[in-house]
Image 1 (spheres, one colour):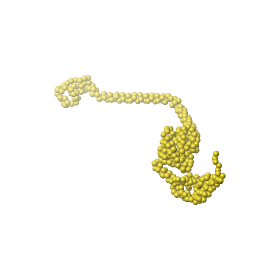
Image 2 (cartoon, rainbow, N blue to C red):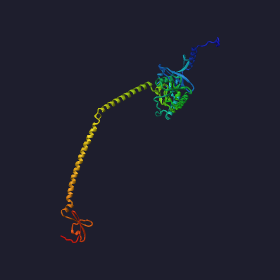
Image 3 (cartoon, helix red, strand yellow):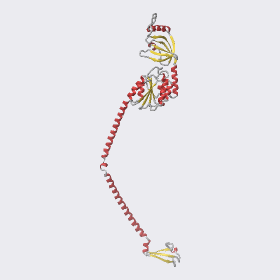
Image 4 (cartoon, rainbow, N blue to C red):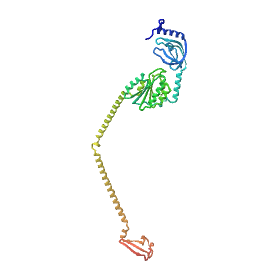
Length: 406
C-alpha cells in the first residue's frame, strides 16, 4: 500500500507543471541560433515542415510553419547542414520541447550526407553498381529467402503476394533487425549464411519506409559487400520510391516497395496458366491447320492420273522401248547391207586388179631366188642366176643361160 502525501504539499497538475516549463523555456530561449544536420524531414498536407536537428551528441525536434517554409528558396531535405534561428517552444499534449524555426540557412553538406557520398564514390569505383555484373532473376523460383524484420509490415505484404502469385515456392524467412545498432551486421551475416545453403533461387531483402536514420543500416559498407559477394540474385526493397539506398544500388534488382519486390521475384500463376492455355490453343490450331493442309495435299495427289492409272506410264515406256528396238534393228540392218555392198564392190575391184587374172590370160611372173624379187627387166638377172617362173597353175624353176636385149 502506497504512503499518503504530506498534508502541507499542494501538487501541481501535469498541465500546470507543463505550463510552467513552457513559460520558463520559451522566455529563456526566445531567440537562439543553432547549427546541425537535418534528418527525418516530414511535410504533411498542412504544409508545415517537421524535422530533426542533430550533431554527434544530441538531437532536437524542430518545426517550420508553412508561412516560414514558403519564404525559403530551396527545399529542405535530409543530410543538409544548416544554421537556424528560432525559439524553444513546448507542445503540451506530448510534453516535448522543440525548436520553432524562423530563419534557416544552408551551412554545407552534413556529415552523414558527406560520408554516404564518399562511400558511394568508393563503391562505384570498385564496380559495385555496374550493370553488367547484375545477375538475372530466375523465371520460376522454387525457393525464396526473405531477409527482413519478422514483425514488420513488409514481411506480411511479401508473404501475401508470393502466396497469391506463386504458391508452389518454398519460402525461407530469415529474421533480422532492420534498424538500430548492429542491424547492418545482422543483415550481412544473414546474406552470407544463405549463400552457404543450396537450392535458394532468389533473396528478397527489404523493410518498410522510414527516415534516413531508419534506413541507415542499408547504407552500410558491410551490407554492400555482402550483397556484392552474393552468388544468389538479390532483390532490394528498402523504403519507398523516394528512398534509394546503397543496398538498392548494389542489388541485382531494385524494387520501390516490398510488395513490388515480391512481384518482381515471382511469376503470376494465373497469368502463366492463361498464357499456357493460349499457347496450347495456338498449338492445337497450328496442328489442325497443318493436318488439314496435308490432308488436302494428299487428296490432290490421289486425284492425279499417275496414281489412278499407275501402269500407264510403264506401258508407254515399254512401247517407247519397243520402238527404239525396232529403229535400232532397222538401222543396224541398213548399215550391214551398206557394208556388204561396199565389201562386194571392193572385192570386185580387188579381183580385177589381181595379178592372177593376168596370169590366167597366158602371162607369167619371174622372180629371183631366193629373195623372190620380181624381175621387170633383163638387167636384173645375170647368166647362171636361179629364177622361178610363176604361172597360173604353179611355179617353174629355171636357170638363166643367156640374155637378149630388145
